[in-house]
Each structure stands twice: as C-alpha cells, then as structure tokens.
Length: 493
Image 1 (tube, rainbow, N blue to C red):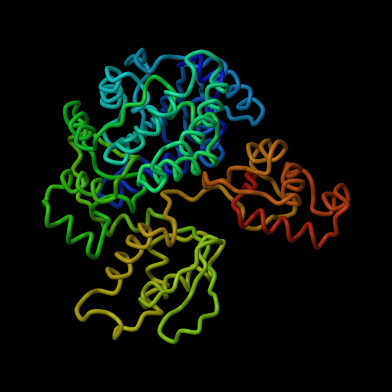
Image 2 (image 1 turned 180 degrees about the vertical axis):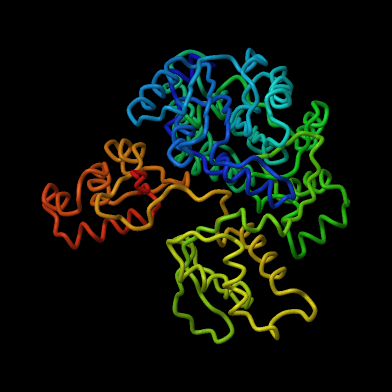
C-alpha cells in the first residue's frame, strides 16, 4: 500500500468535517463537553501529505497537530510545505499506525479519514485500541469508513474494475485500462434494458468525474472492507469507547424529523438500532462516525449553558418571491430555499444582515427573539428554547453553519491585507484554495492573481499598480476574498 500511495497519491485536500471545531460542535449538540479548540492537540492517522493538518494550522495557530503516514514521499512533501508556510505547529511523521506506542501521549481529537475500511481487518481493532489509549478523557475521535448496505451494490463495481485491471502495470495504467473496459462492458451486456445496465451506466458516469487516485484506492487496492454500522459500534464498545453521532450532524438518526423520525422510533428506542435502520432506509455507503470514551454520557441535547460556546457563520441572501406566505433565500451562494416557518425566516433575516460577521449562538437567539411575535409560537413554550431548537435543526438541514471557535479571519481587508500562507501557496499553483473555515474556495482569475500577493506588507494601491488593475477593481476583489474567509487578522500589537 505504501508503494501504491507513493505512485498515485491523493490530491491535497482539506476535509471540513474532520476539523476539531466541527467535532466539538457535534459533541456539544449531543450534550458532551469537548476540549476547547483553539489550543487543542490533534492526531491524524493516515494523513498522507498532511495537507488536512496544514489547513487546520491556519485557523488553529495555537494547536499541536501530529500526523502519521506510511508514505515517506508524501510525508516529505508535507514537511516541505509546512516549512514554506511556516506551520511550526505541524509535526508529520513516517510510521505504521499499528506501531504507535503509548509514549506519543494523549490528544484532544483523533482523526482517521479514509483508513478504517482500507486496512487489513486485523488492524481495525488496533485503531480502536489506539483511540482508547491516546484519547484524553473528554476527547473525540473521528473515523470514516465504507458501510453496508450501500456498498453491496458498489462491490459489483469494484469486482468489475478489478477484473478488468491487469495485475501488472502502474496504478495509473491499471485505472485507465479498467475505466475503458468498464465502459465497453456496459455496452456489451445482452439485456440493455435491465436494471443492471442502468446501474452500471450511472456508476460509469459518476466515475468520469472522480480522480484516478480515488478510483484506484477505492476500487483497485487489495484492502477495502466495508463495515456494517452495528459491527462498528460493537468494536467501539469492546474497546471501552462509545458511538454518539456523525460528523455530518444532519445525517445522524437522532437528527431526523417528520415521517422518518416516526419510522425510526417505531423500530426501536435504542440509538444504535435506529442508526442501523437509518442506513437500511438510506442505502448508506459511507459514514463519518464520532466516538468518545465509554465513561462519557451524551444526552443528545444541547445544554443551555453551551449556547454561548457555539459560533454561527453563514451566508444568506434574500431573494424576490411572488408567494405571500413564504420567503426565498439563497444559502451559501448556491442553494435556494422557500421558507414559511416564521422562526426560520427571522433567523435567516438576521444572518443576511450580519454577513460576513460571525456571531455567537446566544446573540443570534437574542436578535431573532426580537423579530418573532408570540402569536407565531406554540403557547407556553419559551421563545429562546424554540429558537435554539430551530438553530440546531437548521444546522442539520444545512441552512447555516456552526463552529466551536472564531477563526482568525478578517472580514474587512484593512490597509495591508494578509491571506493565509497556505492559501497564497495554493493560489500560486491552482484556483482551488482552502479558507480559514477549512472549506474549499474556487477563485476567479482576478482573485487568484491578487491572493498570491497578500503578504501583509503590500497596500491596495501597490497591488493595483503591480497588477495594472483599477483601484476600484482591487477593492472589490479584496472584499470578495474577505467574504470568502481567506484573509487573516493582523496579529501585530
């Protein structure tokens, strides 16, 4: 596996759902008291080049971030990048996960993205043992894995690709041969009107957008062992750990509502059985599960005292609407929603007015309460409780984002605008960069040219002169970059 990851490495990507801030938010919403994020200790297993940790270092300069990977080439590449951007708090190490010993110490957060299903089965339990040994008492671990029933179908695709991929040849050659033969196979099946052909064609179409590295490591590696959720929960329990939720909060069984909530409750009042049934209903093929020490007691309720610890950052824009009983909003610059619930409307109105500023959940509750009439709520229910519950529900729907810390981002460019060193480095190579919220941003040509030069020592006027751009254009681009959370706060005293 070391050789194949060296020959065909994954592209450098950051994963928002692995960020300690996100893990702390979900834990807080589940009634736990996770470690503070700003100076946390993070261990990432199978970190590749460490890009995910390098991205975290930009928003968590006080954190200690340690990564392990088998690939010397990727670790060396990550170390060079860390030196380039001055990420002194990132420690990347070459090593086998199974060989990590107790001397490494304990961590607040442990991340293993794309590891658990992609190692030999005997190493799985050692990963859980490692989490038990190296997770501090209040710590949270993130483990992603392929799961059934969704992977029952995907095994057909894996079998077909592995059949077509020659045993010899480089990983890239094998991927290209397998892709071509799979497309040919879809056209040669005798019954072209069958469900099987329709399934294969959908998968072939989806694979066209996937990277060669993804196709090889997902479908052609020797190890890819999907793990049924019940088996995952049993492994956690057997090693003194407890499952409590998903890193994508809205995909957790306990976060469902309406008819699905009724269906889950009808099956069992046990969370683990509800989660397994949820997978069956959704045909889920991938999970991003969170675990803690078994001694922790999640309540799956947000404690009132925790409201002030959570931060809301979300872009919402009001749109014209012809409906008299509904409002239309554009969320995150892309999704349009029509909203009738007066509490949701009031929350979105506040977010529209506050963007791009962040605000505490407590402040959002207070500002929303001023806009909601008592007649619009059920009698006898405290308005603050209704709004808090709606904020949590809307977070699960993806209407707005919650964070457990305030990223060191400047929402106004200032006199000497500074972009994060990682964003500047990436902008010199590609229009795809990662912002201080650990989220991807696609830059325009103008934005890419400007971002590379934002070193905190160059004024807007100097930028305009060096790039032959009008001052108004520079000002507009700088504001756009600030709204994308790509500019850092000036830390000079």
